[in-house]
Image 1 (cartoon, rainbow, N blue to C red):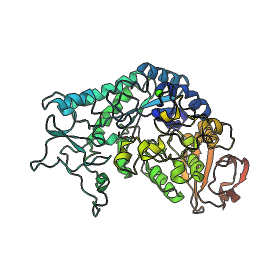
Image 2 (cartoon, rainbow, N blue to C red):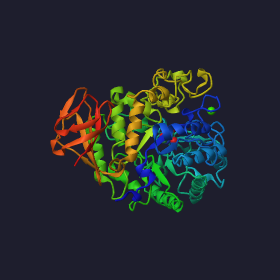
Image 3 (tube, protein in one colour):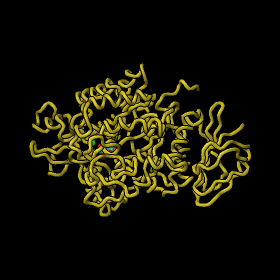
Image 4 (cartoon, protein in one colour):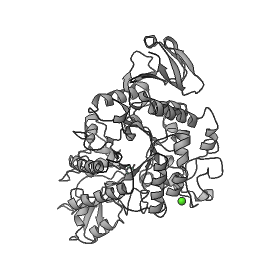
Length: 542
Ligand code: NOJ
Ligand code: CA
């Protein structure tokens, strides 16, 4: 295949911006849209990514920090205005970057006008826009579904004496996508943003929009000890009926047609947040004829143990199951997941960068990972995330702390006094920040920059085939990326100690990047030294 058959969302690298924590422009201690606009040059010129994905910025009571939307077609005053959004789109495009926004299809906020109307009476025209049920004849809950954030998924509403469904917080009522008027209203929202110039959507918990039509009970995981899981029964069920009903495919096909109808001038894109680890089932969200989502997010690498065989197994099995023409993708971190440096250990963050940016498929990179930011230990009283407050241990604030730009008192994030920042800063921000790392030849940022620059110019990395290499030391993961005219070898050593690889059948090559950033030149592959936690990309001669 030649380059023109690949789209920006295939060749590019996506960078996730969590607006609350990226850059505050007006000194209230909370990041905002003008703040993001101010930092676009960093993303384009310093770092070198291709597209940004913005987590929600819509009007919201912020019960789940914006994933509880009270108006899909506006900007929360905390984040700015629609004019600020338009300027952000313009400035993004001016730099030849793309902009993807979060779309939250499964639930609104309980303050959304649709829900307010829906809850007002049994015969309100919008009653059926949400999922309402009476108790069972014996007075018990409509079914055994659990909220992802703890407790039952049903909330009693005394106004009309029925329960409504909420797969997440009770402030996030689930929408009834089987109602055609709801679907039309949601598609109008999509049109609204496409008209404003967005390049794509990340669909929050995408497959949750398909629910069993009879709302059957989920089976409990056989043999599970319910007592042990009593504080989070969600984890004790097989989620057969509360999400992933095939009806979701029907919606996604229509959604794709809508996106495609806007794609003649430039391709629009969709990625669904779909935590499914059965590959076939997961891949079904591309659509039988690749007519649904451009991709379901692939979280398998993120949840795999950090060791070479497990990581290779994820990649190999994905490669094996991917429908013809479907495009792979990888992600290691996001706003819901502990930081890479804390999960894998600081000694592995460079290796993680090299892996993510050399695999075949679109990488999505979460803000701050390019600095090697660590989890921030936040005292319970200062925690904000409702998940962690409901179910201690599951809190996500630790990876949502302000971006670390420089060594000034609020890390360049805000002009507010430090105690006014919405979440505390990491203790190490004076050393771990963009400014310091921009001036360090061997910083993690320098490595990301180098890898991103390489990826931009390398056909093998952008769309070359992937071919794993067998018979390497057990601490190593080695693979080739092969495009016409370019053959790259990627070799990663996960051990603490040096290993020597004999890859003599591959001849010799030129070292393009090492995680250690201190090597270059010719490499004889019958004797490839990899130091502890070192990864390399080598351009092969033949
Ligand atoms: C997934 C989002 O990534 C997470 O932050 C949010 O809390 C839930 N969906 C509910 O919308
Ligand atoms: Ca602000």
